[in-house]
Length: 88
Image (spheres, rainbow, N blue to C red):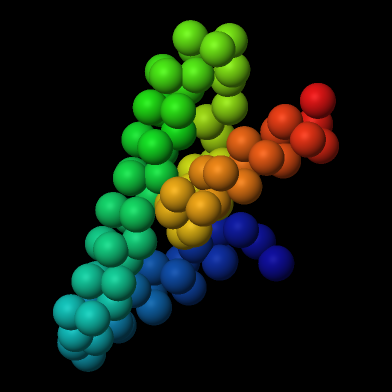
């Protein structure tokens, strides 16, 4: 199928969602998820800032931000462990 058809169907679905009144709960959930992703990106930034003293760098990309955002500090530690023990 054509990608424009998918985009149109998604747009119609969003419009119907707003017209029917989906409530505030999905927006609250999405906002909380976005805040966690931002905190995960900041954690990786500070890890890289303090890791530059030890010549250590962990790339900040979509996968690492999702892992650190969803799992928190244990996720960041897991990323460091994978980087040190498996990738090096």
